[in-house]
Image 1 (cartoon, one colour):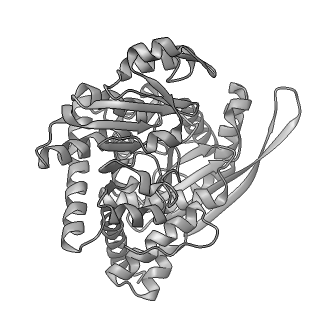
Image 2: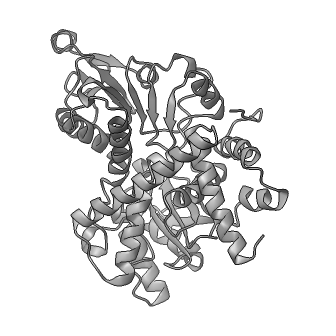
Length: 433
């Protein structure tokens, strides 16, 4: 695998590096490359709200629509100080690949508002959410572009957005957005979908290699919704979870830790290390007695383990630390956790990387199920959601695995190849190329 990296690495240049590498391997011509390299539309606005103190505040906001050859644009909306246009473009591009890899009839898009919701009241967050829909409403809709939750957004925010959309369009539109509360058109299984999708793939890999889960050690960076659910699924299936972390750091025990207990203390104290530490002060004697030590997020990545699951930030496995990664398998639940430079090093070390565009696609897959339910007026059972999610995820994994084997590619290259070919096929049918 080769990677062309610009002097200034950004989320979008990292996406382009992988894209160019795969373009060469599947021998695409210039017209196809051009259509698959840049967004079809970039919308940007400045959202203005009145703060609780009566002062006005402005926030840059974006909606990037990358490709809709295979269906309506689909992608989350994140509220974060770093949600700039470059990041949103990269995430929209990855969504276009992701929906194609799992074979659901969507394109790819992404939205962002540059704000810190931790510094805003609930009313102010609601004002931003409604203002976002007023700003971009003409570009949204069940058959145009269907948003979803992402970093720092949730079911409540999706409900406010749907309500605002219905007000300004004078319509009933349950399918215009996904990730809604169950009582307002949401789907069962949506909250655990990202973790369960990745878990199904991991179980398939374990079964294929006839491995005993109890002999496999797992480290999980990130204990948010996806990371915490993944930890519990793995623990319940007999895997040994040796480390977890959140934004304040993490804990490590070679003998394994109980994610249910960790989540209880996380909920109570706000930290995965809350059972042992209050801020920077830790009960060292108790940690020694339990065989636990506190670690940083950087240390977690380099621990002795069999499976590493980045489930938080992007750009954490890099050319600087990839050589020190000791895991044999990396399952990317986070978006973009591994840089192209790191991919090259990991491939040489024969570390298998199941890329984000496949591993974390359970979320958008169940979003598709919610969209279908919204359009049909049905409410699927949890069993049906789980069964169909497993079917979709394993079919996608098997296609990527076959492509990797037949064409001598890494799993990331194979996933991109599968997604790009499906998008290109749709563009040809439409007469775009």
